[in-house]
Image 1 (cartoon, helix red, strand yellow):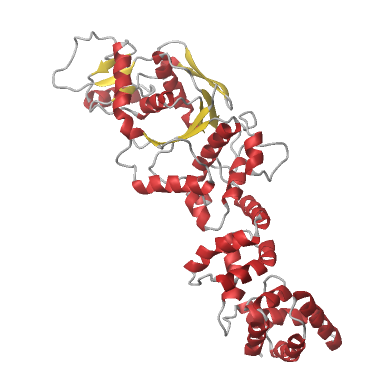
Image 2 (cartoon, rainbow, N blue to C red):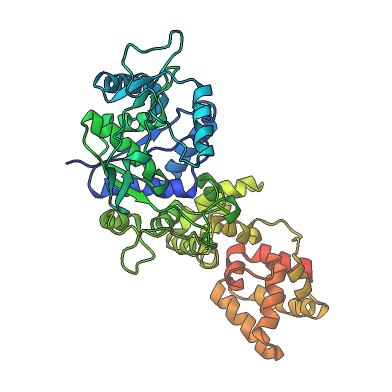
Length: 463
């Protein structure tokens, strides 16, 4: 059997971190088995679905590197096919016409509330003869769900989940205006797309029980279900915006790498021994449904930062220099060939300290700053009168040295020893004068990258 998975978001909002994890798990399952991964946009809620959300979902998937097979399926465009299945169920006796008015249904619900009963449709049109109609009243089509026994969702993550059929009412398949409901559309699309595995959040478990009733009534094959526990924040509560959860597209803007995000999402509820750092190639090789945990995973953004720092250090200096281009452009600095060469030369020292591309862009301030430098407060405090006097004596020593990091380091150490100073008393004001900051990559690496003319001029400015 060829495995077919799908990611089916509703474009009523952006692609959030939970949805991105679902997409990743479906993608990995398909790629592991050499199967097919499909993208379906469930845009049947016409009032809330927006083009902006669709674009954000597609862009987020592309940024994550989750490529899909074949064309994107838009659910609303298939409404006629969904309605056709509802009518087929009606013809087979697995569904029926219901002419109950909104007022009747509200009265029914009020009565159930007053009696302390569960709120659900009571089947009042279920067994009426076909000839029993209401002129000029467009009916809905309802599933004729079994009233006894139970529906069992056999789930690869949750195990067997049982639902008593007497609590699953005769839900609507086709509305009175002829539009299909979500419950019907999902089942028909999955069947027509040949979906073999449905991997989604466990908030869909009850939906699975209802959808199974449609599948069984149609005599269609039952897909393999895997319902993922929802993500929680660090406080154990369901993940929300107050925990800092963002749309996936926003993580790109914050300087995270897609390979780091894939690794991070993979470890939210899936494990492979004690491995934390898992490449995409390893993930494809190792992924299975058996290793998905049944407990909600907690989102820890510090872990994402640490993973991203790891992937930054693994990325080539040239690639990182190119990735910084758009960020620096936003800040008003064009990366020409000369600056790119300096970025590449400085990158080994820069990426050891940074955890995101944004931090990298901040760290290259010393390369892009214009003289005289705008010193931060800590740098100003370092440049005391005594420190400036040290710089005045140090400048000709550096100017006479061969302009390489190792040689400059040796010259500064010799100068400090001759003056009876600790190296920090020399290096710290030197860093402040050349970078305008109290922290930076190794100061002698910075001098080597900037070159003698720019470096000495910056020192002169502070003397």
